Length: 148
Image 1 (cartoon, rainbow, N blue to C red):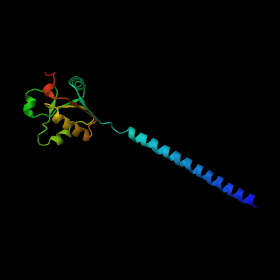
Image 2 (cartoon, rainbow, N blue to C red):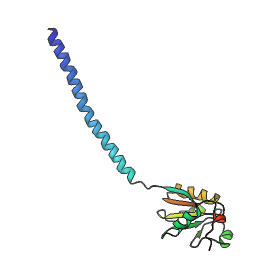
Image 3 (cartoon, rainbow, N blue to C red):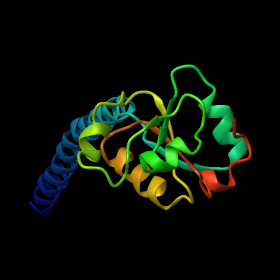
């Protein structure tokens, strides 16, 4: 009698362990599928780059085809001299953010001001707006040696 009770208990334990193992396998597979889906979803996200660059790197990036050269100084500062091909959107001007929204978000944007403060703020703002590659000229146009 004790042998049959022990046998029944042993069989119950084995069955419960076996069912536990078979139930975990689908959960593990489901977890793998979720992780694979997450990887696929993450790979489609656009990487956002914001980088402070020195004058040499700024010049190299600004000469690439399709790059937007953005001068955020006042129109008076802009008229005193600017990087060739730059567009001027006054940081202090009315409609500044709306004007930024008209720029192509998938292009490289190199941005500068006189000393780096306004362009640094603009770089972060562009990045927040979803611009994919934003490069800020360190120390600004006041220290830029490649003037025309």
